[in-house]
Image 1: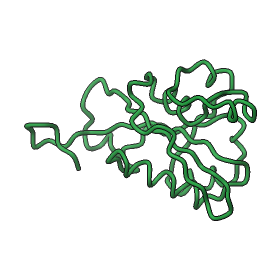
Image 2 (image 1 turned 30 degrees about the vertical axis):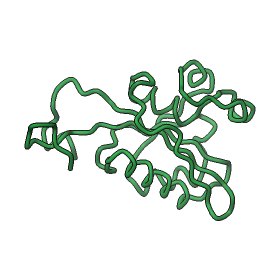
Image 3 (image 1 turned 90 degrees about the vertical axis):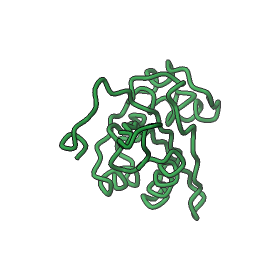
Length: 153
């Protein structure tokens, strides 16, 4: 676990994950993408406080299965709400399919209640063996006060 500079106290990460995927993406591909994105920022599944995606994915079997495996629930935002978020990597392809130029980055930022300065993993993409893609973005959630050990679990 990372420690604050000059301190023996572990840093308490609070992360929001935004998820996007192709229709029919297997849970394994989504879970692998999540694991890779968390590793990229030094996070752990226990650091995740919020997970979000677009409402078009509320019935996506692979996504829902991956969420169950991690023990997480997700909030699903409408495309118009995601489209209003300023993101570093908008995509016209994503807009054509979803109505929003961003799913994972915008969902992570909305779930974190922050802006793109707090996006610590931008649009991490994983292509599964079947050619279907999962995209994960991670944003930092600012905590107003330190969490106790009981709040972390």
